[in-house]
Length: 368
Image 1 (cartoon, one colour):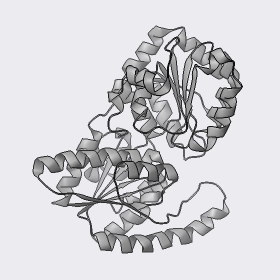
Image 2: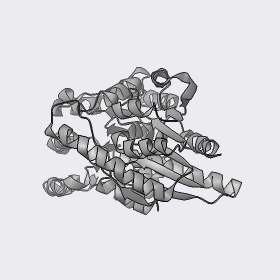
Image 3: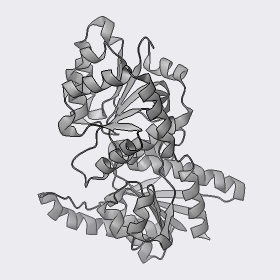
Image 4: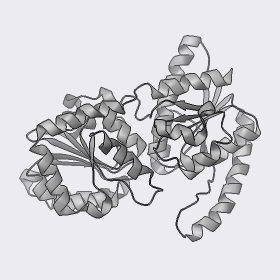
């Protein structure tokens, strides 16, 4: 059985692909079916590293992105998009899959469209509480649209929609504090604050955290995922700390298999509000402060407020993510362990540990 993944972009889109791939392999063992995989899409360096480490072959193709603001790239991306479809036609014709799984917004467009042309059954997944432009468009060509939030089903029509929830690192809930202690050299002298800006880091989060780092380290021990391009600055900031504080600040560019241990150790999480990040938080049952990105179409903002609505998170939008407010909110939460416990318990409402397995089953059904 041949499975095509139409995906790409950042690590946040690749992690669900990996989760589905691992569930497909479990099903294949039971049904005694051989599997072949290929991913077609536009990829950044983190995405390529993830695919290589999880043994998923890939072919890069261009993908045209429609931005909701003026940019000369909108013009050039029209041509990139057409060229990406031509590239995808060649790669998909050579591979000729039995079924396609589309995950990744605009990066999945070439693979899903060409699969439709070749009449290959296709399932796409919309993880956000507000569908993106790419998936709204691709929903017309997909056989099945799997969604993470129930309210999204009405956008695509009930007949072809399957509510499955969201996916993230396949084993995110299996980390341990002991292993985290070894990996990050944690002292566990204070509560652990995990700061996550997505696979590429988040400039605004990093800069605010670094401004208040000495004050924060009086309250907590920190694991900070800064993004690969920000490692030099993180190193410089760490060197400027007093020795007694430097041992409490642990930074990394990007985490893959170590991420589960970082979550296991965390008492509180500060994070972007992408669907994968939210699922990490929910499956590990962590209280969180969410900082939605402002340059998307409102997906992260909507995701964050869905979490706030059930009492699982506090939302700080970027204009409010200031040194004074951040320090105040973290301090307030740490002084109210009962509130943090309630937030932790509420995450179960959005935790969907079987989402990848359900998608894998759907893909098997579509291929036969």
